[in-house]
Length: 129
Image 1: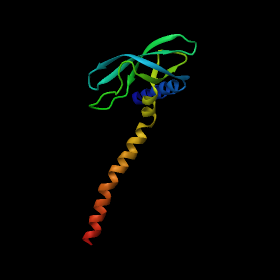
Image 2: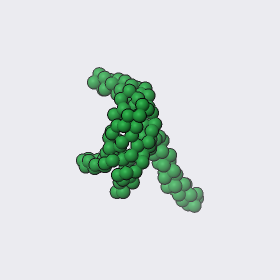
Image 3: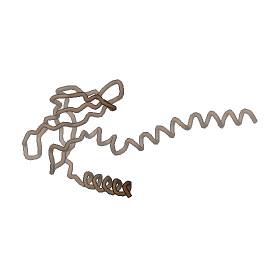
Image 4: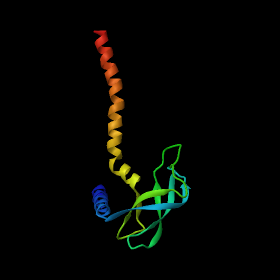
């Protein structure tokens, strides 16, 4: 029963989150901070303009490459999406792509890297007979 409640809450929150009206714009990174813990995160403060011309600053998590970092620095332009109803809710377009298609990319890479050992094994079986 406990897991059912968590599942329903998760699905409801993801449904509400996906129903947001997102607006794509470009902003400028004003500051980057690193948060170390179990997983290292880089949070950037991004200054951008809303549709009505008002300028706002919001934090967004940058996508990182392990051991290399985010490849972004202060002053860089970055493409972001913000929620029309809550402009403080911001996400990067690149991070959104990875969030939506990351699992598919990992599955395809897994299949590609798994095929080579399987083909070698089949070849060795044919050579033995």
